[in-house]
Image (cartoon, rainbow over all chains, first blue to last red):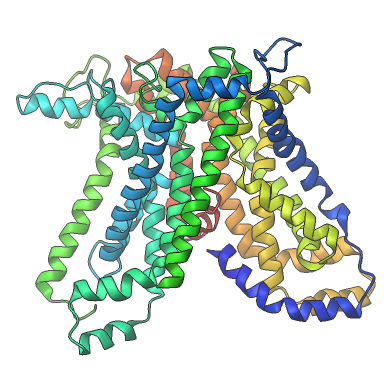
Length: 311
Length: 276
């Protein structure tokens, strides 16, 4: 984590910088050097984001030149809409479900692959590979696996004389398949971050614990886990944000169906805008989604940072 | 952990091998699917006896993958280049000149990182229509650059602050070099590790982008590989072999690059995953 590391270093050096600044009072900001970047970010991110808040108070249909301000009515509509709560539930499930799975499995893989065993590097590569593949295409790859007609899973079930299942069409199953595919794809990132964390723990702790006669479980609970807290924080925040924003893999795996059954907030917003010409409402959902992501990622950050300090 | 028993070591190695096998299954199925002839409905687990390489040629033609991959390549490389030039240039004063203005601007860049880009989809789409840039490669480039600039600036400025000695620049200044000259001739070459990370992050994410591309690149001639593949899947859902072949060709360039530069990829992407 280059970013995290450098930040703390720069803080240590800042008192020196202050002294230097005082020596050379008149320092120009060199603003022209960041002007292009600032312009791009303001024009393509900041302005649309603020404009989105404005549109969320209108009944704009997405293409006409005129629209009316409707106050908070899109917001009350949103809160009453059963579809909102369905997609919020799904989105939370994708976010929290993939976060839990990726961290548990990622930590397990890291613990195993941190030992001097055979196939260690090979397994790391194989687990990490899907990270660089487009999530959309990853969805298609798993579509071949789970498809009702000619999918690999049903080929296997038929071979063993069982009934085929319509895994992608059944809302009780397909939501979990989406969590599974997302986990399968990104567990490599969690694994790598945990591996780096494990390698930074000094061997001395374990040797001391062994002399004291601690069991391997006690060592894990009292040394490994507390020392890994920074890695856990990073992983939790990354995975929650990634899971809450899930879009591509839903499009390719289930298309959000059947009906709205497996839609996330992102796919729902897309549908409202492009298929239902309900742009004002889509913008409202967008604002709502930004708020949810912000609150949850901040909560995760604060919660695990506190744990870090306790440990 | 090096004092592990032989038996335990073999057992754990076996577990690792099982994990690898499990993670390779979907790719095995992808390959058998892509190589089966049309009308071959045998189990996907069985490797086909006759290898239907013609699926690849047909998929390449009908999905116009050549055009799509070249669009993807252009968007990815131009975006990465702009990110590196304008991102590093922007980071320099923000890291070196701690004026009030610069502190404020740096905060804007950090705050923007928190905004999930998709939540501003509706107004962004409106903006792109208003400025008449729908279905142009330029808009895809600009959008991608804007969305990765904050992270780029964050990584560059952290690196400049912590590792580049000021004395070098001060010496060059005495010799009368211009600010831009100092930056590009002296500072920029020292930023190689971050530049490598940013190159990898932006290449992987922009190459794989679908969320932006599907909104802004719907015309045939500007489609990227993900958009082309999604459309191809919609039209050929009953011909899985072709879709599988197209999927393989679409991911192959990145997979090859990854296998060649694995260490750089892992390190680079770890620093980028802060963005998620």
